[in-house]
Length: 286
Ligand code: AMP
Ligand code: ZN
Ligand code: FE
Ligand code: FE
Image 1 (cartoon, rainbow, N blue to C red):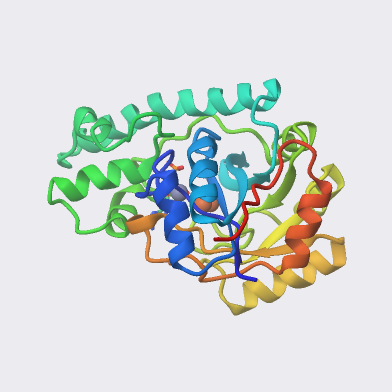
Image 2 (image 1 turned 90 degrees about the vertical axis):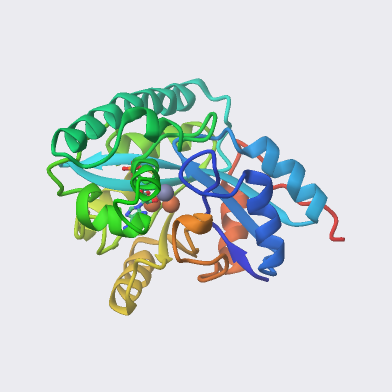
């Protein structure tokens, strides 16, 4: 069984539509894929239809942008009830604050002579998508200022950049509570990522999240080197958490490919057993 539990579509900063993402998963010979767009569940319906069409198992989820001590922390919420009001309200609040944040980042960049306009960035945000820094990166690529998203992040868009502006984001303890109350299963995304704010969460802080209802750690992730993976596996074992593996696929927006890391079927079975918010989509194989 090939299971990849973290992927983005054009409903956030991926470059493939939800249907294309599912088709890509089939092409990558996955048995199951999760759609986990940033701060939105709007891609679920389209992905579900595509899962039926392609005969692939779909795990619907969301990647919630959280903040602790001014640093970014990502929380995956699998199989939440998308109509749960407290969760949906929080996600809508985050998406709205991302709009003004984008405008403020663009103003700072433009004031420094970097060739970008708010209109050019908006043109890169697909309809209904959660706007993010990768869309600014896409506008910078279109303007010829940089060659890739990666280069845009390295030069101007990274978390420590003077052009960086925060958006509203809940504390991870609050987000874990919201996922749990919405019937979902909370898994901490790439907990030890080096490239985007290393060491945000201590083992002790992750223990506190476990006490709050966190169920798993995304141990195998492209941003994790071997020591980070080992640390995540050991910490999960100590805290009684499940471990997942995933690619964090963004289509052409990142170099990772679907299936680059995989999740054990037993971990997916545990997620399914704990979830009450939404069901896994399991079409008949074709
Ligand atoms: P935002 O949600 O607007 O704060 O942007 C963060 C998102 O940008 C992350 O979730 C990644 O998907 C993406 N990202 C972060 N670093 C890079 C990078 N170096 N290259 C491409 N995309 C990145
Ligand atoms: Zn992303
Ligand atoms: Fe993430
Ligand atoms: Fe992600």
